[in-house]
Image (cartoon, rainbow, N blue to C red; front, side, top):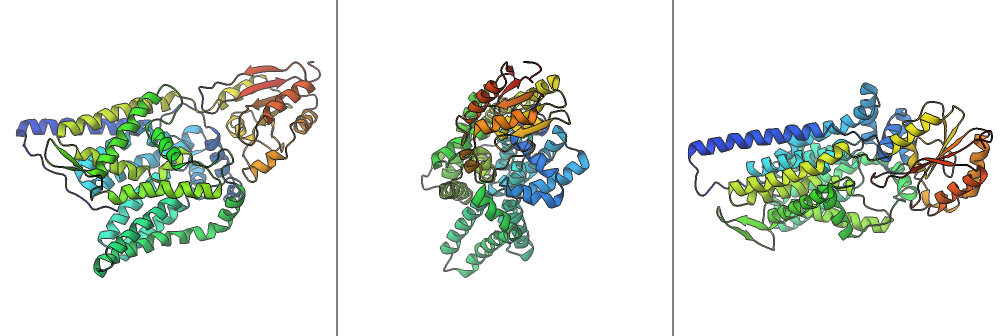
Length: 529
């Protein structure tokens, strides 16, 4: 997947004293950026949002119960098993559960440095390290109790081992590649398309060297090792088949390739809501340009680049894997009626950044390289800083409002059920929770047959059942309209409960500036009416 290239020496050498002073300044700057990036991987004030709360609630189950819970969630098991063990050691507080992803985020830094260095030399390695250290995308998913930071680590580790196996196809490297591939597949299903892309690139190499068996052997063995990673999925295939038939992504429809590219690049620059999007757009544009430079440019001297639209050797394979992963994933999305979320780009983001770092290393003069990498890093820091202060959910605010006014016999309802886990996490013990339309507890969301369930749901029946369950206690309803498969139903639940229990209040209103927002309604008991 690309052959190492040496970092070109300057055409005109600077005086020794100036060179040494400049080098010290560069080292200090890189160290400072990396330290800031490490700190930001453990710094966020937002409470857990839906996906994070779901992860924690599933990981908190007994080990034997996790596979069945995931049948109704739609993800492979590795991250949940690791989080289960992590929580046994460090607890289930917000900072504790996120620290596991932060640890993976830190581990990715030296792996990225090695990956880019082996692809194109020291200059590319340092550029990649700086860009990853302050990447808004990498920082966001290092501060989220989800599997995406782990995906990036496994992809980088697999890439390093794959390059080594191409040079030295020894059993130890091939076996390691098989294990890393299998672990990645057990972490997120979008890795399937990454694996398919790698196999396609290896196949082209086998075809290219079809008349030279000695050179054909390595890519052939590597392809076999990567494909062999699927063996680790075998014990999980039963659950995976059920998920494929019953879960999917009912919250959104299939995405076109252009949508996948656009949303991925947007998230590479900024993963929040609000004013940081301006800097994020510039980051996305800069990384895209550097990616194209890495793919199509060669340096002629200290002042000139030559662009070749046919692409140049070096990271052609890495770029090909990025493009093929997007293509295969998009086709699979249409075939299975599943969507793409920008966080899935964690499967190919490391290789994208390797190519972009190689592009930075191709810039003609040392000053221009430092200026571009430093400028992009500065924009990244501004965009990433919003991750520290921006709330991802109103869940904590809603839970505090309920806790302040609720009695032990009150019932807290959620429409849709997707609002439940983030709010339930902050509720006092003992309160009864119920989700639309099943009246089940709010700890988890059952994604199995999600759309058919809502197609058959009756808001009037849910409101009546909720009124009966609460009896003379207060009903608190957390609700928001506009969710896919529930069009108009939650609004109808609000109205039906208002008719059954006149005098409703709205202690909390939706804050559209928060990613996961909702309103809180309070329906009084009969003694209050």
